[in-house]
Structure formats: C-alpha cells, structure tokens
Length: 254
Length: 279
Image (tube, rainbow over all chains, first blue to last red; front, side):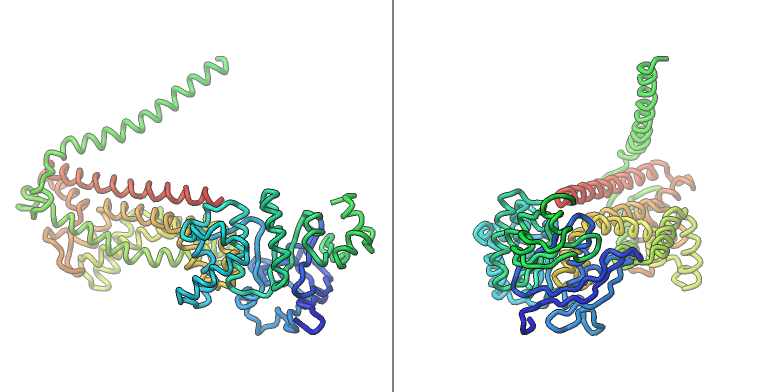
C-alpha cells in the first residue's frame, strides 16, 4: 500500500471488446484493507472493471485495455509484469462457486502446490489455516478428503475463498459472490467479508444494494461504462452527489 | 386420414424401422456366432494354425491384433491428445480452428484402404520397414488419429470454463491449468475416444493386409510381419481355406469388439454423470 493507504490508483482506464467500448474514462483510487463495493445496473461495466484489476480480461478474445492501473505504485499493465504473478497477488471469487472436481483438501492445497510447495506438513498447516480464515474449518474438518462438489453452495463459495487465501493474496476480487446463495449462506459470506478486510483489500461487485451498504466502506456507482460516483458507502447511500446515483439507489431505474 | 390415424401409421412405420435395425444386428451377430461358437475352444485360442489355418488355432492372429493395437494406440494417443489440447485450449485463431476441424473430420472419413496404400508406399517401401508390426501399427495410428483428436477435443471443451478461470485466478499458468484441472476432468471422455480407436484397430483388415502382411507366425518383435485376426478371417474365407475356422475367428473378433464397446459405453456414462454434477 502507498503512504495514504491507496491500494489501486486508476487513471483514465478504458476497456473495449472487439472495438465496442465497455468502459471508459475511469479514474479513482481504491483504498487498501477496506471493502469497496461496485454497484450499477447489468451491463454497466462493473464486472469488466473488476477483471481489469487481475488482468483476467486479457483471456477474452478481442478485449483491449487502455489507461493506467497502479497497484502499490507499480503499473500492473507494464511490460515487465507477469499476469500470472499478478493473479497470485490479486485473487478472484466468481459468481458461481467453482471448486475443482477433487477433494476439499486438494482444492485448498491447489494454489500452494502449483507454486511449488510439496512439504506435506506445511500444506496441512496452510489448508487448516485457510479453511479457518474462511470460516469453514469446523464444517469440513472431518471430510477433508471427500469430494468438494458434495458440499453445499454456501460451503463451496467459502471453500473457494479458502483456496484463494491459501496463496496469500493481497487483494480479493469478488464478482457477485453471494448471488447464487440462499439468504443464510449469503449472510455467512457477508460476515466473512467484513472479517477479511482486516488483512485484505476486498473489492466486491454486487447487485444487492443492501448488501453493498452492509459490507462495504466505499462504494463506486457505474453506469453505461462510466464511473458516476465514488464515495464512502454511508455518504453515497444517504447524500448521493449525483442525481443518477440517487435515482439508482432509490430504485427509480436499473 | 385424421391426425390420429396418421399418428398411428407414422408410429408403426418408424417402429418397424427400429425393429428391422435390431433384427439385422441380431441376425448378423447370432448367425456368425451360431456357426463359429462350435470352433472356439482352448485349442483354437492357444494353438498355432496348421496347414494355412485349416487346422489348429489362431493364437498368432490374437497376439498380432493385440500387439498392433497397443503399438498403434501408444503412438496415436499422445499425439492426438496433444493436438486436442492445442486446439481446445490454445488455438485462438478462428479460421485455423475451423480448418483443423475440417481436416480431422475429412481424415476420419477416408476409407481405411487408402490409409493402407499410403502406409504401404511410405512405411513398407519408402522407409523400408517391410511388412511388419511397426508398419501396420503406424498405419493404424494415422487411421485412428482423427477419432482420438475429435473426441479428446470435445471432452476438453465440455470442461466448464469456471474451472479454468478458477485456476488462472489462483496464479496458475495456462499449462498448469490444463494439466492439473482441465485434463483430469476430461479424462473419461478422452478414454472413450481411445476405446473407439481400439475398436477400429481390432477390426481393421484392408489396411493391415497391405502393411503388416499375412505371415502365420507369432511376431517376436516390431520388425516381424504379422497377420491380424481380421486379415486371417479374410484370407480363410476368400481363399476358401476353411469357412469353419473363418467363422470361429469372426466369433472371437465379435466378442472382442463387444467388450471394447462395453468399456466405451461405461466411460461415456461416467463422463456424462460428472458433467451433470458440476453444472
């Protein structure tokens, strides 16, 4: 993090898919060790924005990114930055839980293993700690060697977060992580997100405005590929400075 | 005719078509087995043929078929799976992908005798391998390569994108993603393709007659000529040596093919169940 606590500093960022602009002129700073929510109607570019932060957009054929994204004073689009190493530091949780078709243990150990760790004792330790940090340990400690796909949806989503924590990232990107979960599992997840910000910078895309209000410190409102407003969550939800933000959060459109 | 009557008639016609299909299959298989089963005994399966196959067993043909198939698959599987990984996971250029798909599809439709004449020209004559297990197996491997590529590619494409994204988002390289997550999930489907390829190798006669030869002995190494079961059957029948032994050989062949297909079905079902569960 830089001195003032900024994790990402984004300047005039734009993304297009096959020359169709999806995002343009995005400029703002995302604070470290806080939860930042990205809200806006479907197709507004918030998921696209999230995927620029770990360069997952590059995997989509025809995607082009312009502008600058600084992470701790390092331009993540600079030629010398390896996207694979970047993704180790900036992890991502997807809309639908995506555990691999292997055991609970192997899912969590996957990251450390591909990064070269073989020591069984240390792997055991990492798996246990990651599952504890994702508040899943008590539920799965006796079935670590059962298939991960047998877990419930909510458990799978926490497993995916544990799998991410095992590679010790600095930033957690979450793309509507609770949208496929039942209300109780979603509440568990929100609690976990609030806890995770002690150690991680969390950026979460959500369609659920109450959820954004509950879990985030800052909120960014996107509309038609532009950033309309970025403010502290309490300020944005009570005294929106832009008319469009107010219209959206009061349900007049979107 | 009212709609109901028409429905009845249509149902009867397609029902008859289905029945005829099953009937033809049963008549062929049972007809062959009825004449051949009596020939199958321990002697037949474990003895060398005597007087050109009129007497004795078909052990060399069984050994040859298995040897040719194993060598052919050992060559074709790694190449085919590698090509499929490249096509499904790395090839971004749409035009190149369409061309490769068209190429493998066309290759799959080429009659086996064409592969035979090609293998005869290239392996037997030009590369001077003669009629041998190696020439035959190389020819078979060319013949089944498209099957393996197509099924492996389909199996890889059926692996949910979310697995790939999940692995990449953990800082895995593309290659690690393929080897650790995508390939294991696609393995049952790839296995189905390999089993189908085995079926084609086991039943092949024309291509092998031209490339592996028709020697009656048990091949002792890859340079030896070999007479596969299907070739043996062809020669017994076409040269009027012994129809009884021909039917016996055919029966053994049918058992082998049925066994191979049963394995293929089993693998395909497992793949289906896996994809459903994760979807």
